[in-house]
Length: 202
Image: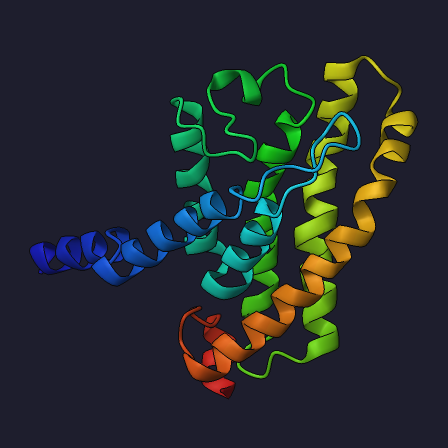
């Protein structure tokens, strides 16, 4: 019986091949969205890669979505030029003004995925919009803004003001994410494991 319990525990810990493939695909998607290059209008470049982070959370859920972002960040940290503008290496995670946003992507993918899982299987548009704003914008800024202030040596409120220019573009990304994720979840239900209570009601 002990062997059965251990085997069951290991099977829950090891990701199935399908999940690993999904994680790799979304890490590649985030990298591909950087090929368009950054739009430099301030100390932190505007890129499409945050859209990939939102997609990862809203389509794969908190676990797989966060792992996809983590895989992308690890590959970037070891030197692969995967960030928009062909940037990579440990420096972008330390002294760069954008460093905090990279860490914030992890939190953003998790929060977006966590909240999305609680909206499924219905995934109502307005609630999904709010969930993606909380994960894709608020959670990311919550980490990104303080680190940006620290790295630039600016007051927190001044740094927050510098980020206002990013919000319209981020809101467009949120709408795109919700529209795409809604269609994906209709076509492929079960991509995100529902919480136990919701499984019983679904």
